[in-house]
Image 1 (tube, helix red, strand yellow):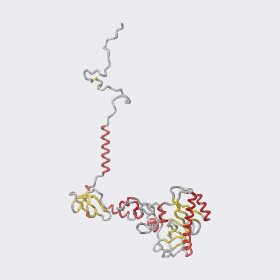
Image 2 (tube, one colour):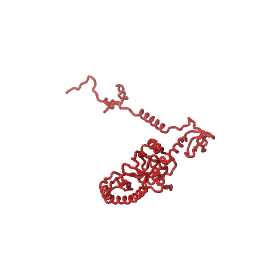
Image 3 (cartoon, one colour):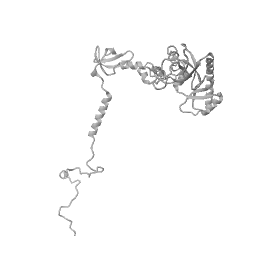
Image 4 (tube, one colour):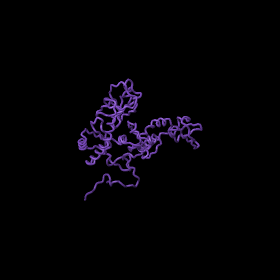
Length: 355
């Protein structure tokens, strides 16, 4: 059977031997790796046949849209019994005790001066352990804290670090839409949300208005992202030459939800036409600016390379003797009367006469 259980509302398959599954909202007691926990049946109206859940684990993962971030369902343990009135009463009693346990843990954290924030506590139904959920920027050495808590409650203590979105799942309240936080009410698999989704939906980019209880972008921005993406694919890109009922023009703007295309005609007027009433002219696609810029840069580089001066004909560092500027082809091309750079030479056949 498929059961949602625990303070974090985890989803898991549990082994059982029941042949009939109640078709109403039913609480159950299950055995997990933490101990005895209280949970609730999932899909009891239509998803069971002869006491067995009809969908396989792979089908459940596909239904919940698993994207590799976290498995929405796994093997949780074993079914123990249907919850009795005593079990439900005990669960409520433990919830009240969890508030006192949270305050006690916060007091110990202040005494030990630990860099952590205690968010909530969960007392397992069977009493085997108490789980404390905390937030911290990095790793925390809480061994002394665990010793003090174990001495205080005489049970096993588990410290579990969570993020801001998990904090909202535990403590989230009413959001700006007037509804309870989605992650606390029904959203279990928290997928990433980015600013692109807000821009595509023409939402305000004010962080205060598009951020949720956790301080991050609201999860509801993702709900309609697939619809917006599919609708956007049907619209032509800006700058494309199209043909409308009134003539040719270029696309200057588009509207995703209404599927309207704003076209600027040759005379400068602008009209809005449904996307189904326009025709894209194949030769009217806008030039790729990146390719044009790359070609221009390559041409500029080649031109600079050809115009760059080559190495000197000779001189220091070239490995060849330096020649005079008038020495061309081994012949002296110096203008008549120019004696510069000519060394004094003695006439052939004459020698100094000693006294």
